[in-house]
Amino acid sequence: MRRAAGDKLGIAKAVGNLGVIAMVLEDYATARAAHAESVALHRELGDKPGSAEALINLANVAVTQEDYPAARASLEESLALSRDLDYKFGINTSLETRLLGVVQHLLEDLGGELYALERSLYDEAAALARQGLGDAAFARAVAAGQALAEDDAIAQALAG
Image 1 (tube, rainbow, N blue to C red):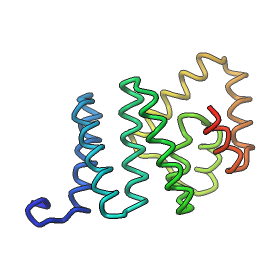
Image 2 (image 1 turned 45 degrees about the horizontal axis):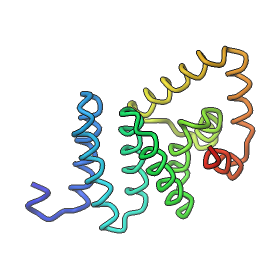
Image 3 (image 1 turned 120 degrees about the vertical axis):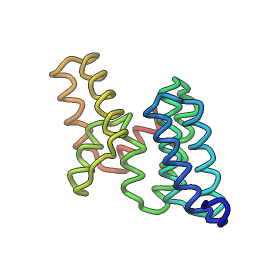
Image 4 (image 1 turned 135 degrees about the horizontal axis):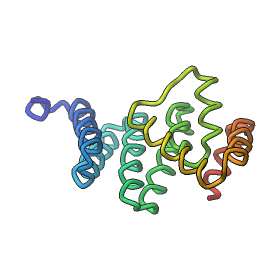
């Protein structure tokens, strides 16, 4: 219906939602294609916040498929768009997989929350980090991340 009406923004959002559903259903090829189409449509419209969010969704699929170079490229592009716009949600989500403590800090400052799928990915990343580091080291790392200034956190995330 949106395609017939030529509603590109509506199409971009609908296709992105289909990608989220495909991700939940573990149909990663469909999810990746849908999110890539959503990114392309948001870019065509010049919708930078929409592009930033669509790139995060595309990165989440790439991480699930263990395509880390593609995930990093999408997250870096999303982060650049978000910083240009001073788009705190996009900055926050771009960093979540790298700096869990920073994410917690920004969420508290902004009074925000993650969507269910993002929360699931965040919780999984936190559980893996806790398992690898142990409880005490994990707590110290999160506290260190929470103490970082936004620009320092972004610099650390980009440094790898």
